[in-house]
Amino acid sequence: MRSRVSVALLTTTPYLASKPSGRYSDPVTRSTASAIAAPTRAGAREWGALAVLMLPVLLISIDTTALSFALPEIAVALQPTAAQQLWIVDAYSLVLATLLVAMGNLGDRVGRRRLLLIGATGFAIVSVLAAFAPTAELLIAARAALGLFGATLMPATLALLRTTFLDRGQRRLAVAVWATAFSVGAAAGPVVGGLLLAHFAWGSIFLMAVPFLLPLLVLAPLLITESRDPAPGPIDPLGIALSMLALGGLAAGVKELAVAGLDPVGIALVAVAALAGWLFVRRMRRRANPMLDVALFRVPQFSGALVVNLLSVVALTGFLFFVTQHLQLVEGLPVLDAALVLVPGVVAMIVSGLGVVRVVRALDPGIAVVVALGGSATAYGILAVLGEDVSIAGIVGAFALLGIGIGAAETVSNDLVLSAVPPAKAGAASALSETAYEFGAVLGTTLLGGLVTAVYRSTLALPAGIDAGVAAAARETLGGAIAAAPRAGEAADAVIQAARTAFDHGVVATSALGAGLMLVAMVVAFRTLRHPEH
Image 1 (cartoon, rainbow, N blue to C red):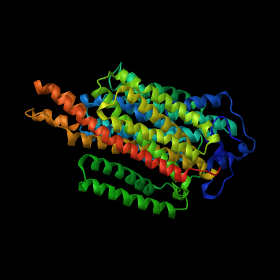
Image 2: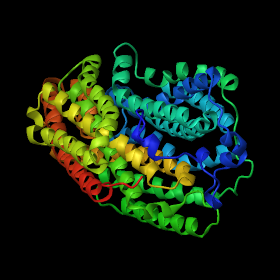
Image 3: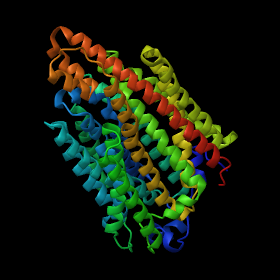
Image 4: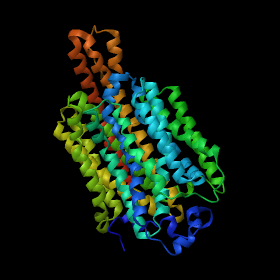
């Protein structure tokens, strides 16, 4: 029988509801077997713990996308290069993605609540430092440190939910709230960022972490019960290093290729990443107790859902990267008005993500994903066809279509990631799903944002005779061009118009790529996600 809360939560039996099974048995299962035999229903304290655990979930998901609206102000204030601007966005998600599995294992050893509190403390401190970073380099370093502490938060929240809610029905509801909070936070991030920037400086994007995390630090010790693995496996430092080298090298290589073209450095980075990835997989296959079970990828439904998950996030973050700049720097909208343009898309994403649960009761989940992603492909197609002639209303409609597609695809793909594997592997599956989400955020700004930059530079036609410093700034980013234009004297308007035109050329090319990625995701969904076995 299907739950009214979520299809995903019925097709997945968490660790706590299963017997231990070989090397995949969950330590929590082993340590709470008696509790499982006679499940204890959660009371007021446990539901209070759920509310506290939602604070870091909302913060992490909002922080992933809220920075989009701050980029123009950061570009003016810190004058980052094009590569630095991409790293300001990506350093956080890259570090977060590469450490999720490792930090999940660490929480098993030191205690999940303890790791949650350590991560929350570090995240709050570094957020304050990021808010007042005087240079682009220091802001990038702070973003990387935020990714480190953020990686301690997400695995801990999900693991603590499993140990807090022993009753099966209550646990389904708790996990549904977790998933909804994550989706809502990610979708609302740009709007929250826009509202903050309408009244405060760009540093407010980072300072918002403090009111989220202070209640957590006070209430978590009172409401959340500690849990850990009583017999953890050995730490695998080499495996952790290889995974970080593979993902970090790939992102850095793609960035280098996007900014500098086919240069030896970018090619070498990608080659090193490929080698590290191969060595990582080889090592995981040979270890008796691997930090990541790579055999999961042999399940077509599992690997296909991860690909759809990743490509959906690529589409969302890439879209936000250039549309937020277009609204402010090309259309000239105030930051609050630009944020409001995205509200219908945020609402569409939330409604779609929740509504698809009812849809898949009557329609095959794979077909539902294909149809939803068709809307996302159409959204990118609108921008590619209309180009610089797209109106604000057109952007509203395009983002609403994108939101419908991404919301439904994310809900169903995460459901299928979990339901495609045995119950004893649910923890590893959820960690991989979160990793795909974060790495998709990296690739979104790397691939799509990098293409915008490359086309912008190649098509920028500045007026003759302007100052060399103005020309150099204009060739870096659109924000740099607008900031430097007043120094061009009578040619200021011509510099701004040339930069805006070149940026829109980049948007057209990037939108065509985004539509292509969505078509690829549709094919993957059609071939792997239909007729899932529950």
